[in-house]
Every structure is written in C-alpha cells, then in structure tokens.
Length: 189
Image 1 (spheres, rainbow, N blue to C red):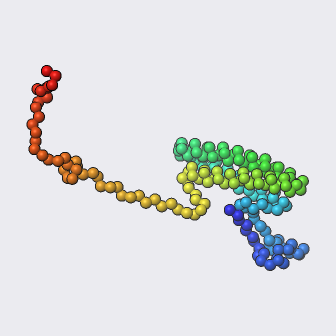
Image 2: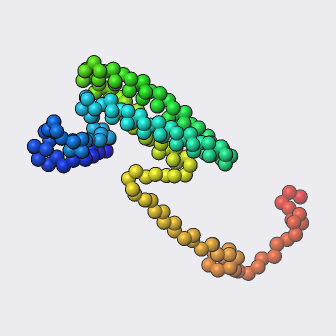
C-alpha cells in the first residue's frame, strides 16, 4: 500500500519549489513516507528513525501483553506471545543493523547502496508490522486491515430420522412364521 501524506497543497508548480528564505516552517511542505515509497536520500535516515520507533513500540506492546497473559496464567497466550516477542526482538535487531548500514551509506552519498539498504530495512519493518498483527491475534484481537467482515450462515440441522419400527422406514409386515427352538433341529446330527 502506498501512502504519501502531504501537509501543504502542492497543486501548482510554483508551490513545489523550495520555500523562500523568509518562509516559516509551517509554509514548508512535509512529506511522510510509508508503504513502498522510497524517500529521497536526504530523508532516509529520518524515515528509518520513525520506522524504528514504531517497531520499538510494537516490541513494548507485545511485552506488555505477555506480562498480562502471565498474570492471567493463560498458557496459550503466553506461548503465542512469547514466540511473537522473540520474533519481534530478532526482527528489531536485524532492522537496527540495517539502519546503521543505511546511515553509513547515506553519509557516504552512495545512492545505490542507500536504496538497497532502504529496501532491506523496509522489508524488516513490514515483517515487524506483520508480527504485530499476529501478536494481536494471540490475544484475540483479530485486526483485519482490509476492513471487511466475515459472516457465517449456519443451516439448521435436519430433523432426526424417523423411528425405524414405525413410519415409512418400518420393515414390511407379513404373516408370522414360527421358528423352532434353537438346537432342536440341526443338519449335523
């Protein structure tokens, strides 16, 4: 999903130019990057810091939910959240390393390496968002990012089968044939 939020109106070419030297910061357009949009080289570090803050928040939230599950002695939630927390920790550690490499590549003005590091870093932050969703599912908060809902219609049960001794499934009635007592007639005498 691509989301670019602009705080200023950039409808005319003149407004897209750099602000005048006397312009206030409120007149300067700001762009927030998320989704698969790659920020310009000079804004990659700030965007990476914002993403890292978001991932740290995910980690803290999962830790908090894990602590609550332990207090409630809910073994299922504890196991699920513990797994998600270990995955978030590993993802966060990898993202921190990739962020350091991104900062170094931006500092050296190597655009190709910076773009490569951004793509890898962004893959890790997407994984962090996915783990946040999975952690919410552990505690029963199934967040559906599409905003859709699922409706299940259950058909009523069919009526029970009729008694087999009466009704249409009853055996046919005919003359009763007397049977000899057991053991009185045997072909093997």
